[in-house]
Image 1 (cartoon, rainbow, N blue to C red):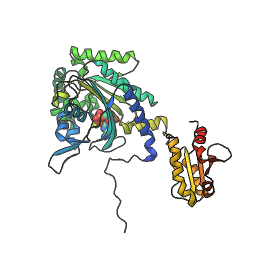
Image 2: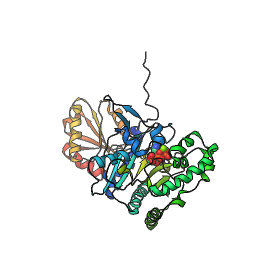
Image 3: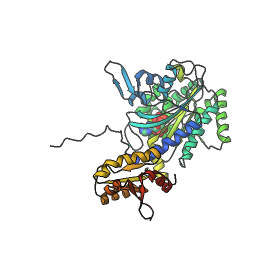
Image 4: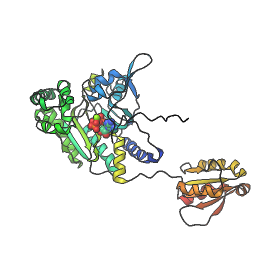
Length: 425
Ligand code: ATP
Ligand code: MG
């Protein structure tokens, strides 16, 4: 009797070898750009104390109220799989004393977990690239972080992604606005859905972020935060816009952009595409000047963004086609008993001489014919052919698989040089 197969948990995906090339391209470009802008990698735990997320993201957010994977560990502590990276990074900055009189630029990559309704572009485990900067109060760093994200998208050859920009202002100006908003939505209570009614109590700004099409009308009529910004907030925001103008980064001023986490102040932004169905946000971020104190550290301004890797990889595929998988450079055919004894050692010898050349050895024997078929299918440029007769004479056959050329015989001592020449290395 066959056993029933085990499926992965809903909303959690395998990234298969056939699809990994696009991920590597994205991560490779990001890694280089982070270094070029002076951002250092930080790695933080995937699991943190539940209290960390409640205190940072906010009790009344969707994430904390219904999207967290929370569990008790065997010792009885409440732990949560991280739904986003900023809280853990801030915690790490504080725990390690990295914010005292210091400025920090860091980045991080890895999986996040949210118990959402899975659909295209929305998963329960998804990967993010994150960039964060601490200790910079002015709008110049806001601009730098946006320039970094813009260059990342540009380097990947992506187009038609709009930058939406807004200011949430200082906590003081937001309080004034919040009251106006509660007044307005209370007057229109009959038209709100259950989610929005809940938000009206705890977090009215989030109603503006509702994706319910039936609410868009009433949202469109709501008071606009921009009108309630104080002088300090206006100056910060116009400073940011000037920096972006100076490098020709275009943006859409979007007074309804509020973001789903509570800790934001001043700048918030989102890179949006219309080409991924309804999950159009590929990268989002903002400033969080109060978060470090909120988590028990000394007052330090902070700002960061997070990029959704699944969404970006799909967009790359849609706009640029598949990223070709890395094929081997050389396929080593090994046929016969003596050849079998010598083949892997020959491959090692070539790797010693040419560390960057990719060699696939034919493990598992087989006839010359079937191995050459595999060599061709592998996409390799060259085949090395080692039979018992070659092994006896310490030579190997060398055959070009992609261009017409006669097969030649090369001595083992010379084979690395010959491969380097053929591959132009
Ligand atoms: P959305 O409005 O799409 O729910 P969000 O505001 O919740 O996004 P953030 O918390 O700012 O998103 O996360 C940053 C980025 O991570 C998003 O712009 C998006 O690209 C990606 N992302 C967020 N949630 C998911 C998810 N459940 N599945 C896949 N990617 C996600
Ligand atoms: Mg969300």
